[in-house]
Image 1 (cartoon, rainbow, N blue to C red):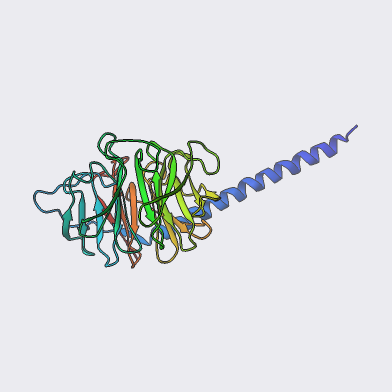
Image 2: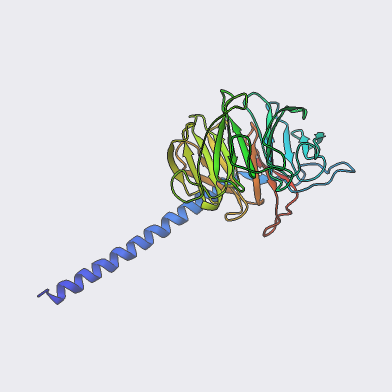
Amino acid sequence: MDNPDTQIEIAEMTNQTRRFAVKLALLLVASLLSVAHSYGQEYIMDPNWPKPLPEGIEWGQVPNVTIDKEGYIYAFHRADPPVLKFDKDGNLVDSYGSAEWVSLPHGFRTTPDGNIWATDFHPSLGHTITKIDTDGRIILRLGARGFTGTSPNTFNGPADVVQAPDGSFFVADGHSNNRIVKFDRDGRYLMEWGKKGTGPGEFDLPHTVVIDRRGRLFVGDRSNERIQLFTQEGVYLTEWQQFGRASGMFIDQNDILYVADYEKLRGVIFGSAEDGTVMGFIEGSEPEGVVVDADGNVYTGEVTGGEGGEGRIMRKFIKQ
């Protein structure tokens, strides 16, 4: 029979251990919040960027933003014309596009060779991806407008496209399908992977894709609240759950991953693209899209007002 005194001592030790664990956890949380706060203070929203739009152009929802090699910032918004081009001071310098090539703007991302991929996920008129140059001229289009499917030539709600340095590109065919589709530089189908689910290599709304300097493909598996990492041949590597519900992603020249989350964390969370270490959080926007310029300034696009956002605007956060 066990000694009652021994049992009491063990119980006391167990309670002490639990109290210590709770205190340690609280200290860790406080430390992380302090780090996030200090990093967040590095970014201050510029209330005067962008400048007011000229008469005849009004803001629509801004699901995505991008930046070209010359530093011009683009908003891909749900109004006419769909593409707005701004200089670093926030002046509108160009606008183009029409319903002839995009009905409901979604993904918008520059390529290593200086062009732009745009996706149209309109439920009855879209389901295409279009490659344009920075003046809006169409270079390549894939998909059958108004037709959905899972074949190499059809999409169903394509959300984003990212292009590798060799010209091959990957489509997050995510709003109704749950797959990543790979094409060669000329648009020839190569392979695909994914289905709806929660396991490795499965998706529930793959919404955004980027490629890091190591060649790894990051997929923002939004409704599963994780980022999955793959090789460019579709081999699962790992997943990160610390970046919320990824709607948009961008990796800057310093190997920092920025994740736009307007649904859960309601801001931009950023950290190491190498190992996923979270470095901080930028509040003041509820973004679906995010991009960063060469000076480290962060630009976001909004589609919903949420708990305070206007939902029809692009914002700039200046790095201090």
